[in-house]
Image (cartoon, rainbow, N blue to C red):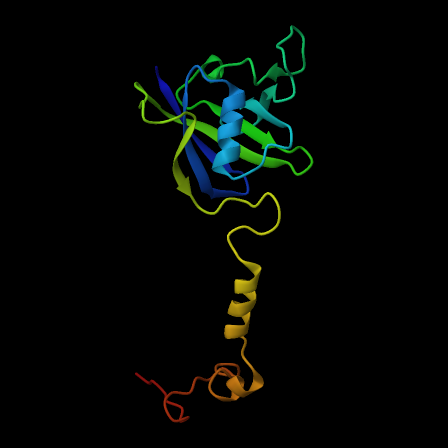
Length: 186
């Protein structure tokens, strides 16, 4: 069975992304859970995928709270819609929004198709992580106690300012060596 490879960019920083492989027959609900796992988010809030174009404009919606696809319904069901059903082109794009109150937005792009799955892996699976992802709650990746230690370590006192961290260059001159000014004439 074919695997679809997607790159999921955090909208606020395109240097932060996760690459996920998913079986073509798996649903958008499984894809949604894979993205949550990749970015270390919990499963407490609603989410939506939107079909998208190259300008990341939102199209038809797939919502995690819609349980059944109904004719004329405002959104498709993530639970019932396989990912491959909405992949129509080699660079297919979606916009993924998690927790409508916080509006966590991710840009999802198909980056490849692999012919065979590896029986050693469970899908969806993250096969590449780049950058520190956003923290759903609070600060991520920085221990507040360590941050205080770092600030204290580099906190320059008035005494330090007198020992060489002072006013260099403030009057337009630069002193070299023992305080004598050098001029470089050609």
